[in-house]
Length: 93
Image (cartoon, rainbow, N blue to C red; front, side, top):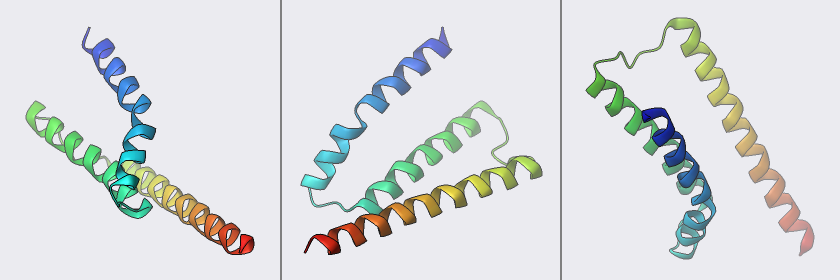
């Protein structure tokens, strides 16, 4: 039952992502701040949840390296999208 509740909660949160981003942009936020909050806040919630359950927060070495590599890949992808978007905007002027 817990897995079903977590899956439904994740689905609702995912569905609300665009609406929340739109409200954040209307409130004066920028893409970098929004991305930082989107990644840092869930990481903090996960760390607290693991600590409350008494599970280790630290990953095994191999898993940690994979996580760092995926984080670097995501950062590179986000940077490339930002560059592409900025160059397309400058072409339109």
